Length: 512
Image 1 (cartoon, rainbow, N blue to C red):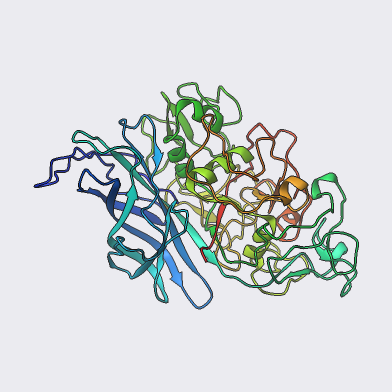
Image 2 (cartoon, one colour):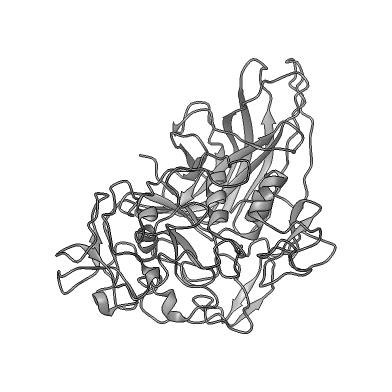
């Protein structure tokens, strides 16, 4: 999760014998359900180099690394040279595994993986283990695009998103009953009694009513056009990738909004009236709706689920997934974070892993879901569900009118939570030409001047090429099935309006 504190302090650092540079930073003793970054220090440097160095500590709970997979933190940097009016993405100085100039710190042994585009880095355990991860004094060198001067005032923010590494390997998409399975599920046409389709590589996939092709029913137009092929560049889930452990939280989305210009903010959260709360309209309501507590306070966004004079507090819902979003919001968040949307094939692999599919299967297996029927300690890091062993939020229970806190639902095969229920998963579909041209490019950390993602071959502002999978807190249990695809190519008739059941989850292709 992206973590920033509800209060911030600035410090003036001295460069000792070097000519003093006034480098103001954001100190972030962050509290959250799992991850926090603290003790951020912008280290001194010489003025004749564009490379800055930032030192920080990172910690999160429930971390693991085993022979199959592991979790990780995607860490990236934003900086401001104009006292926070505008924010730039801080690309790291170089790529590679534990690159030169990076320090891995002390404490839990970690490795640092910097992709070739240097938009951020994965921090992950370097050896098998399980439990709390706590590493101090990590150092990242990053590039400052401006010219360092003696009176430079630089603000910096670090963000961390919890991810899970899903390894390379074959998997099944669909249901073993083929066309008799969940609505519009994938299957292998005419082969092995129309069994589920096995994806064994990233090579092109034929779609159509021919022996051995990937196919699906078309009960409605929202399942797709049953045309193809799926090109080689389309991420099919066979290659290794990272997927967010949780859905994007309201704390994350708040922090995203607060690094944008006012013009960009108006596109990513239309609520511009002071004191109003996030929803799908320009003049938002005077109180939170459907458990979204993001509030506009004179152009700055805060979390205020309790709707009182104290905001960004422990009970203000920062760990609740963010609803009232649309596809353009997801794409913008992914671009800003250096991530990308996931595909519906990757989503099925995240749910099922390499196991053979069973009829009517959920991310946790075949038992029908146990419904979340209540929320305890609402809005706090200690928020819990009742009954405590419930699988997910679905069925529009009267006591659960909105998403529950991240990490409380049953996990999929690799450890990602809320893959069923809570909020709809938005994924790139194989069911339209616009979806099939998606080639897995990552965001570069920057949005266009109006606050939209500007990555080539992503589903665009009109949402065509995206869809819905996995159900929500208002859905029936059948929509939570892994293979159910009744809305897989649905762009939503109200696509430009945010909705109470839509969420955000992003991915990134694993570096080779």
